[in-house]
Image 1 (cartoon, rainbow, N blue to C red):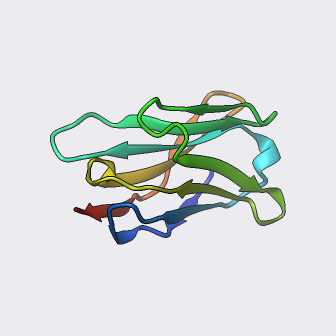
Image 2 (cartoon, helix red, strand yellow):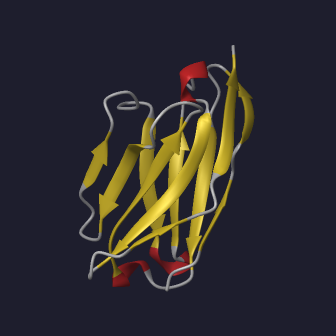
Length: 116
């Protein structure tokens, strides 16, 4: 089992920045991959950014150049730095991790609202 606790969401004006945090209940080295998804009302959940245990990253085209995923192994925490936020970035953001036996775990979600 992996518990994930997210924080850092909120209301921000367009052009602003937010940093989301996801604290895991066990070492990040025990996980195959970690990432951030988002889901806006009426939309499917979509992958925003991910990072493998070896550090390979992926970004959705919609956030490339504006977001950065990182991790602090000592704190078992994954971050998503979001800059130049747009109203269309508004969504509930979910932290996700995948174990080496391909089990997925999800955080509770944190709301990000970008006002125009």
